Length: 173
Image 1 (cartoon, rainbow, N blue to C red):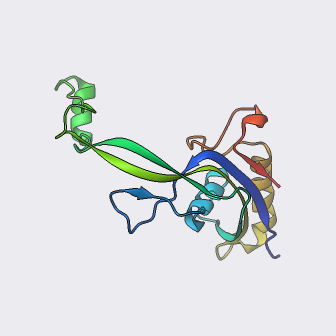
Image 2 (tube, rainbow, N blue to C red):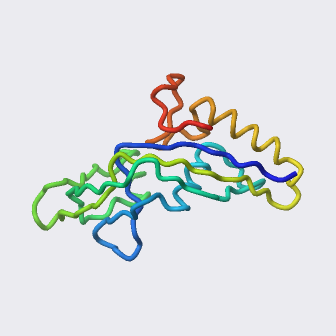
């Protein structure tokens, strides 16, 4: 069986698909990257042992518009796992990292992000060897999850696991 095309629409107020050649300042590509699109499909439905997603096409439904944002970054690194464990055990008092604690503690960075993005993403399930006969089951599972407006993991800022579908950030076509 050949895979059928799965289509979703995604949108949001802000997005940043960072260009790797610009290390310090964040500058977005003007359109969603294939790896970000694949990440959205993975967040909705994934089983890495059985299949992967192949992005076929990205339609830009809203013309990209850039917005400049300034943000403060803390120069200090976060505590190690060992230190956090000591804090939770109460053997060492916590030492916070204070944002805005002076010029030596933080730095301002510029972000060129996209605003009011909307894409229609087309993808296919690509099963690994030995799972080719389960394509129909994989696609049905994806359509069921995507159609409900929820995801396997609801930790993403765009996903919604609530039953209120009109607040969903993506739809399944």
